[in-house]
Image 1 (tube, one colour):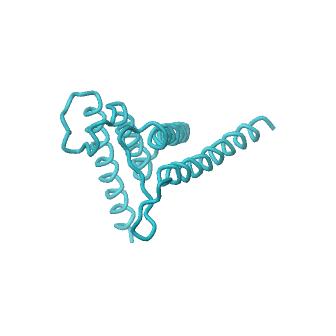
Image 2 (tube, helix red, strand yellow; image 1 turned 120 degrees about the horizontal axis):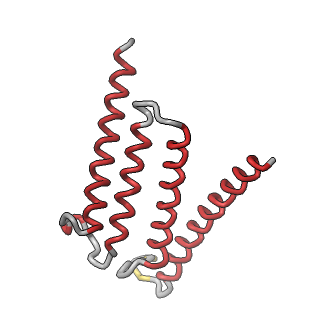
Length: 147
């Protein structure tokens, strides 16, 4: 019975280490310190995207480490909010500003001529819903603190 929590903590610690290491690698690739062009499916993707993804992964490693070791609640909450904010920045970039992206809808083997509008419209609506949820969470949190 006492081995189970220990094994769980070791597993979470390894997961945290892997997330942090991979995030550091991507962050360094975004800065140009290491070459990971083999991991870059779209060469038009700007370097800052890789740096931002690397930071998200490193912070996710910190959140995973919080399951294995105790960290202060303020650090845990701040890390979680930073991860969400960076993920939202990346999501907006992917939907509206990514270069060289393609989006096609096929119907019965024939590509619909308004496929780009449909794809980006659906992606924009979904992203707008996530934005609305995110804003409601922030407003609710601020409202609770003020009252």
